[in-house]
Image 1 (cartoon, rainbow, N blue to C red):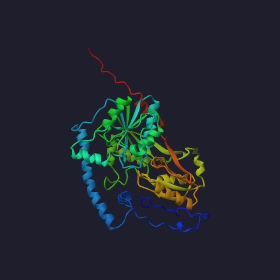
Image 2: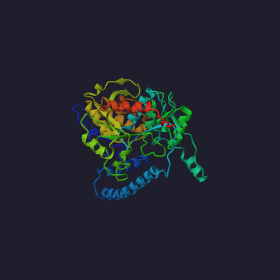
Image 3: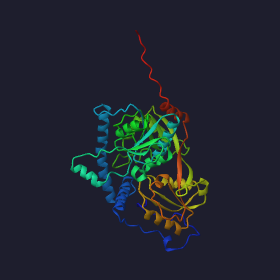
Image 4: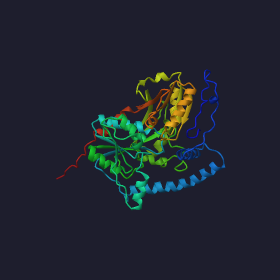
Length: 429
């Protein structure tokens, strides 16, 4: 697997490609900045965890991480025990809270499902606010944080409002890429970012009169009481590599899926999921299971915002660039649409691009004579402004399609939009 920022310019050997020294496989580029070194270390750790690295060093590291997984398992169990026995009590904001999360770290395609829920609930008459922690968003300045610690004070700042439902108020760097993407695609839905989502929920209720809170990535956030738990399971990697953190990608043991009210099997392709459903049923016999797919809709130019059909990709030589948890799924999707990936570049998940990185890739694509560059919508919101655009760049718009149990999806939305009234106890006197 390529290192962060590595490219593979020999994916397609075009007969008409210019015969220059750049056609030869590029030597691995050495990281030069602290950011690149950290991303290389992160990528190394991922490859060790996923058993893609061989050798004594990787084997010893896997052994050590495996021992730490037992400690992590105990911490997870003890934390759940404290909440389950009400030794620690969750906060109840007097508002409907729907959690959308997963058992694994990244890669299940959560953001499009959060968007679909928010849009459907808004159409059903609910006043929706999305609560996100804003992963890798900008924190208060280091000097301010250090000064507050020295003085023994805590920085009390209000939650960051990405959108009030009418206007986008923050950029992707300040908000985080996923909250910004949700804010860009949804109308009449507030998006609020704060690590303390109890505080964010109170703010959304007071400021935006929200009556429904969507807790983005909220399965493990037990501090706020959930009315419904929506759990996503990736069809191709349902329980990661079957190991708990830090040895694996599981946040909780698979049996904890029993907390789910609804289970969405994501990235389905129309083939039966009987074995996966049977395994899920061993841990949760009552949750409704809905199969869905991330369906590409169109390509959108990042500058002109012109939308073109996906059929445009057929037979085209393209450059692919992305920084997501599972880049293979994006690249495989491009190939299924008929594109020929001439050159690609992968970065770590949530990577924030620099102008130089993008211009270097554009120059490589010019040299390879590609027809266009394609990225994901999640990556696009992390692009800086570019001084030139010698090759057209498009992002692929993806939405969720329900493949099975459409009536269950409808019932789920109705259950939230039109909650059943509490039947009063019958009086006997």
